[in-house]
Length: 393
Image (tube, rainbow, N blue to C red):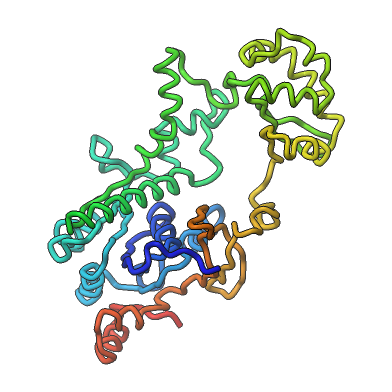
């Protein structure tokens, strides 16, 4: 079945780097939009990151056309402005003022293209911090997420770029809302999403907890759980997470694992009573689970309705049998290596988002993009020869 393309015909010009901005374009591309990613001559430096950044470019830049422009040249800026003039959406995530200095600020772009939706992905929404440089980690540290993730006194960033990606998702939500409003008004608008405010939204549950209880939320490793059994348990080999989150599931759990003595104790039939009795209940369950293998525990829990999870690692997901049903898509990297990477986690009209993708080499689509602007072959050749436009080998 062909993948859904609800945004087919929507043209997006992307001035981005790293993760937050490219996430916006990747999601829009997965939904069928046509993305032209503008890179500097030689390609975005994100392509060459090592270590934890080595996966940024292939993960968040699939499904896009690439053109390399020298935005310090008049000719390169002219090409960029022509692209923006014919676009439905512009996406950018550079420091405040970076595009303004190039004449690509919202007001100028909107004057040339009143239907344009101009999506800025920033560190902060307007306020005292607006001009600060922010990264995913900065936002996690400032906004309380790192505090909640690590043990007391040892803030720890989450193990993925959750704020970059979620901030990108909020950017997409804003773009889709602006497109819908444009159907009624005929005009575009500026949409801004941010790292810091995204973090605050994610820790909002802990802020609300404090507002309701008057007690500050403890970091997750030290929290008092709402349920007595909601933890990672060691087996003979690999650990397993188990959650018992209702009174009915407590009965089922006790019967599945032969915990007749605990089930016979009627004082434990209510969840809050079990929470108060955690110190008595948990040692019994830990001792029992430790006598079993992970697969034996999973065999008991699978299909029971009880929440459970083996402790997976990112590299395990390539061979996950559930993801094999459409959760991964074939991607050819720019060095020719074929890999499988996560699709956008959506199904529409019974079909999964995602299709085989080729990661674009820097400037791979330059001639096609310029021809689409109506440039003739002589002008295209002159732009490439003059260095305003880069072309991949």
